[in-house]
Length: 137
Image (cartoon, rainbow, N blue to C red):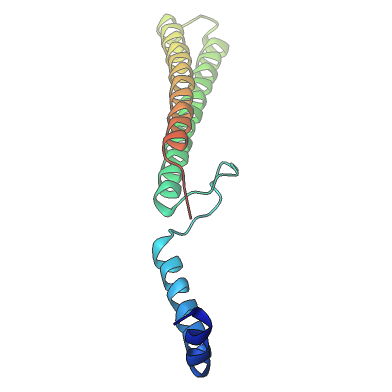
């Protein structure tokens, strides 16, 4: 029995066979491949839902750190303003106010350095994760 004979016998059922094969291919494709989208950072490599959630959590954590930095800067400005008001009212410098201002300034500098370090570490982590975990779909 050759292929031509088999195809001649299957001719009446060819539409059903094609439909079954296409359905099986579609089911395997939808079940086997995870859905992917472009990441938040604009990279051309597509990411899965879990990777996108991880990236979103990193962005939220970075935004919270930046808001804390803004709060500290505003607090420092308020301390300087209060010291300026005291100086304007009394004509003297408040030593405790100067010490507080210097401590606040040191805290802002340390925080900024910490943020830079965390940002570099997060970038390296993302780089390593994307190099180790390719996405196929």
